[in-house]
Image 1 (cartoon, rainbow, N blue to C red):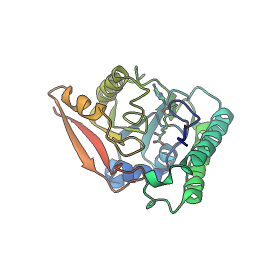
Image 2 (cartoon, helix red, strand yellow; image 1 turned 90 degrees about the horizontal axis):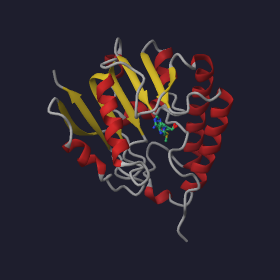
Image 3 (spheres, rainbow, N blue to C red; image 1 turned 120 degrees about the horizontal axis):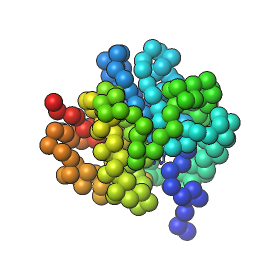
Image 4 (cartoon, protein in one colour; image 1 turned 180 degrees about the horizontal axis):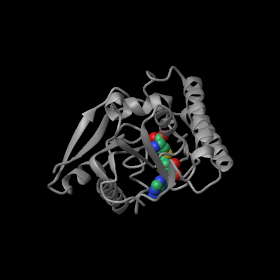
Length: 230
Ligand SMILES: C[S@@+](CC[C@H](N)C(=O)[O-])C[C@H]1O[C@@H](n2cnc3c(N)ncnc32)[C@H](O)[C@@H]1O
């Protein structure tokens, strides 16, 4: 029987700060004094962790107008749905970072709880409601802009125009770099939009596909690094 995921479109969950560091190949000490934006940050614990360590990270997401209790409930609910769905397709994933489904569940639950506490304290300050179609930040406002698990993985539901616009917006608000992860869909096939995005970049942007030390979905060991040249 073919398994059909019960949620249509982006789900509200979040990877942990440990996953972010690996997914984006971040050299943490080098990020001191840099302004970082995490786009479509969901319930990730990255912003919470980094700001507590003295770094300067802003998270934005379409759902950050919602109350802390609503988002906490949504995250736990979507996490459970994700775990139930993965039971049917475990072979599509690499079990290195996580030992098994329980480990994954516990790890992401912790991330969701850390996010929830921080969101309740810093909503509107470190957590800004934003649509990637029109980011509410000035040009060059951040040194590094991150985007995980929204672009490319939903290329069957999110249009080419949305991908184009979102990348344009992230480049606009970054003075230096944009990093996007992953480049593959659930079964490990590269999104049709990756090459298309690279081909239509302005001349002042350099694109590199960089290998990273993280892989959960098969083939998910690469990120797209966009660098703005002066
Ligand atoms: C699967 S989560 C990814 C969360 C986190 N970046 C991670 O890697 O774990 C996708 C997020 O994208 C957000 N989202 C969907 N469409 C968006 C848009 N147009 N602008 C900003 N955020 C959006 C959703 O609310 C959700 O939190």
